[in-house]
Image (cartoon, rainbow, N blue to C red; front, top):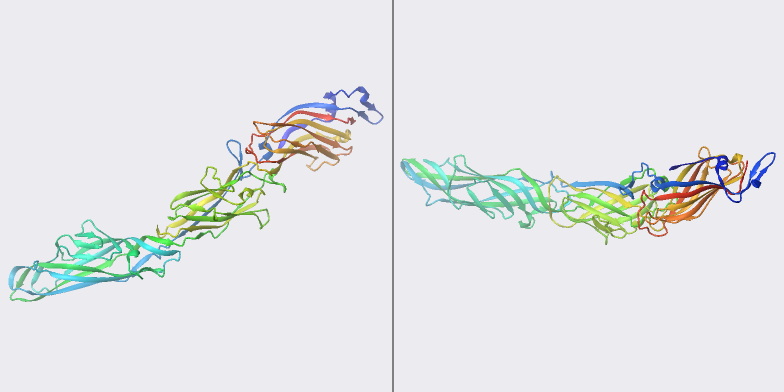
Length: 576
């Protein structure tokens, strides 16, 4: 960043300068060609306004270095990722292979009479029928390791009707006796409609009272709520990657006739009670299952760093930070707990060989994920601290994550391993993770930190008319940056190319300081110009910044340096 400091030409400096005790009129040496002025000529410039760290860092449009509200600088970037899978809903359908129908026949003698009442309530017809049924599914996806229970909302219809074809001379109604029952397998959970004549207890559905059959038959509707494979016989349920069900229901009890008889003489008759049942569309709403949900990300997530700020471009940069840390957060809707792991790699520009490789979440420092529909948050660091954010996970070597600034960073081999437990999954619903990995860590220098800051001063001096000459800037440097600074300088001429014939010497190190405890160091910049040197247009002051120990504070935009008590001197005189 250019500082607005323009030095006047030396001749003007001579006319307005303060001359120290060694200067006298005897110092003028005039001949036919030159005027030589000896002694030490000084021009007090005064104090120069503070050069804030924000001017030296100059993050510009860099999108991975941010200044927080308090002025602290943070390394900040994120890698988004998303990975989902689902249990195929089309595979979890059941094909009903049976239409359940049985007919019970009962023979009896019809008494003679004309429009006389007939009832066999005291001697009802007994029935006992088994209904065999079976259904199966297509092949279930291999990610389903086992199924313990199906959750459905499937209807079953049971129709009971009286066949009157052979009821010679009898017209009337069949009545199902109270206590007649439908015995279902113990693995099926049923629900009855609100107007059902049945009551349910366990797997047994019983008629609560004597129930007449309408002419069209008695239609009884039920809902299958669940099927529990754990209650099935060996070899039934989830077998070899398919759902296979093969069982029966029993309908037993009695019925009687309330009828009118119109016959000339007694004759034989037969009552036929017909039972039919069908499972409707067997749609599975959810499964209680074990899934092989080793959820492996099959692509790399990459982040390319954009143009680096100038202070990070040098090859000798060592961006050592004190306990850098990263975050991982993601929405997680898998109804099982488990662990996650991934590899984080950093790369130098143009290289496919990693600068650093960090295994995150491996034993013993595992990332444990809680079950179901919650935001998972983790904090990674070498110290194992969480810095007030999420679950702490220790990562070996993480302190060097940005020690050498990468140009590319990738996450690969993201693996989520779920516990071997049963849980409920909905077919067709996507399960997985959606989140981001981010580094949001303050610039707290650690021992070994090394960067070079640069500041530009405008100078307009043409030494040709006065060279050879030595110009010396003396100053007191007040430092509130928590880094030792080594002062350096570079002279540039027109076109920002190095100025020929000009050499620069600087003083040594400037001590580290803080806003609460600034350091003050005397410093100088000595410029020596040969007679045929280039015009001096720009002076770059460089500050090689180093941390000799871990800092207690972050780099902050309000920190900086002040140049005080500046003087411009010509210690060896000049030749005009």
